[in-house]
Length: 378
Ligand SMILES: NC(=O)C1=CN([C@@H]2O[C@H](COP(=O)(O)OP(=O)(O)OC[C@H]3O[C@@H](n4cnc5c(N)ncnc54)[C@H](O)[C@@H]3O)[C@@H](O)[C@H]2O)C=CC1
Ligand SMILES: O=C(O)C(=O)Cc1ccc(O)cc1
Image (cartoon, rainbow, N blue to C red):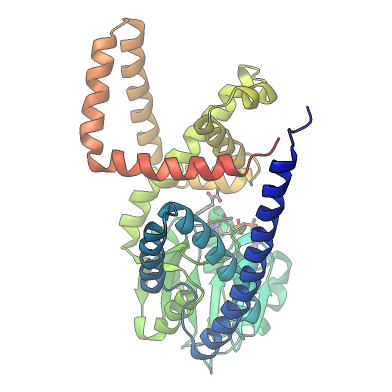
């Protein structure tokens, strides 16, 4: 159906086009200024993400918008999207190199997805990066002889054996891993290398466009004074560092990762076994179900071995999965008994437990759903 038009409408649309073009010109000007900020940040080693500056700038713009009769959320949404662009483009100028005298960085598994991302970030920060891949072990001694830092980024189930296989490293060399679990790799690194050791877990996949606001979990190993520079470097890339003991990290990952991926896996399996028609589901989707399908489908677009390792590497995840089944059965029993009152009582109980977070998550998810809806076309 042709979209309706009239002379009056056309005239207004022409004015709107003009305003949009003015916005475009303003955006161009803003991006140029942001580029200049990026150059200064690069020179001075200022993190690309400045939370305080961002929060105070948004608060001011919201207040100004309100005074002008513009919805404050509109300017906030626009500015957040524009700032994301800036974070991505700040990467183009590179990053300040924090450690001037560090020897070459050897990334074991650097040909893989996450190792590749870190290789790129270190290279953009001016370090010499070498990759030690599966077939490079015959020249490992030469690659590692003058290493300033060795980063382990191999599949989870290979991590400890790869650490044990390392030849003796230079005394001052920093040994770091990026594994999704932390206790076993950290213990293996501390055993294999008497020098500085650090466990890191980037809480994001290799497809992020920038590290701005991404979380990296830091599990201290040994010789913190020798790796403070690395934490500073990661902060310059824009990430937020969250320090935690390896045991606490692994415990949290049972829910954040193992259980989350396991339940998504089971849901995907269920859809397949039920012969669900994804096209049809998409046609019938509410915004929240569209997001759910995207989250579950996303899992199956990634590496089966990564997620199998994450789920299987956590010995306690099995107990948690069993508990989950118990809860499923508990809820199913209410359904089977037609006990709607019991269901609502349990619902209330859980809602009480979520407390203020329930409302916070409702607001947060509403914003996500609006953004997801905006990106729909047709
Ligand atoms: N992909 C992701 O989203 C994330 C991955 N991680 C962690 O990063 C690590 C690597 O994961 P991905 O990059 O996804 O896997 P990947 O499979 O893409 O990369 C692993 C690399 O290790 C190499 N490799 C395997 N055995 C080796 C050996 N014996 N010696 C040297 N290299 C060897 C492989 O050839 C491959 O290039 C894992 O520990 C994972 O838990 C952490 C956070 C996110
Ligand atoms: O991008 C996704 O869907 C992820 O789940 C990324 C991811 C994978 C493994 C990790 O240890 C941390 C993050």
